[in-house]
Image (cartoon, rainbow, N blue to C red):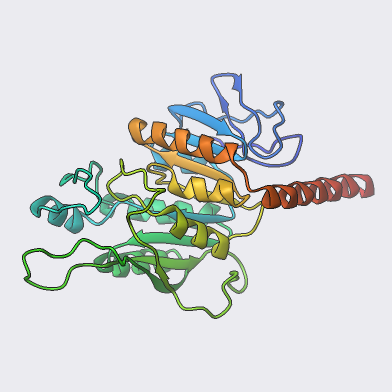
Length: 304
């Protein structure tokens, strides 16, 4: 059993890692004194500001994490959906090439160990994208872990590809489940709003290399509603890094895990660009929050 990440002695955060005796700056405070064993879990490590990106199998990496505030992710589909995707010819409206092979395995075999790790390390929300057929499987797996499954929300796609054979309505939406993994009552920033989110698939921010890429605008909305400034958002199925881009732009600390080295490279590039263009208002608020946090730590130490 691999040991978990250790806290940074500078800020108390767990945003850094230790690989083969090479020190990596803490993803929270930038300190370089941090040490913590994770040498065998990740094939590659990139630290970009408040984002720590790990290339490797999430089932090997998640046991090395101590805790996160929220998990927002787009796991692989059920195997049924993979088979369906392979059997039909789809056409993208933006002129890009369409892949009939998704390029990754279905979620079925790893859902139980994944949800077990979610229960152990997550202190807040789990958002998991899936198709409508997968909602029941996710609900059962999460309830089996004793977690508080809340509801299923809808991503409405106004520019969804029409069903050109005319044999029925085209699929123009995608689901994501919301589950509270923390203690007490669930808390979010959306008040009583409805769980329908409308964002076009094709837009100027679309990268287009990943077959299930989500719009940045959608992920920004979800990150802002389900997390707070300075909190740690984990995406264990990072893909091309859209959740990470949204998290960095919104002043969240981000941990991303991706098994495919090609998609990992894309995510690193996109998140690095997002880090170069911070929101100046969020940046000021983030620094103030960090300053308050460090002051509290110092005061607590003095009191002790």
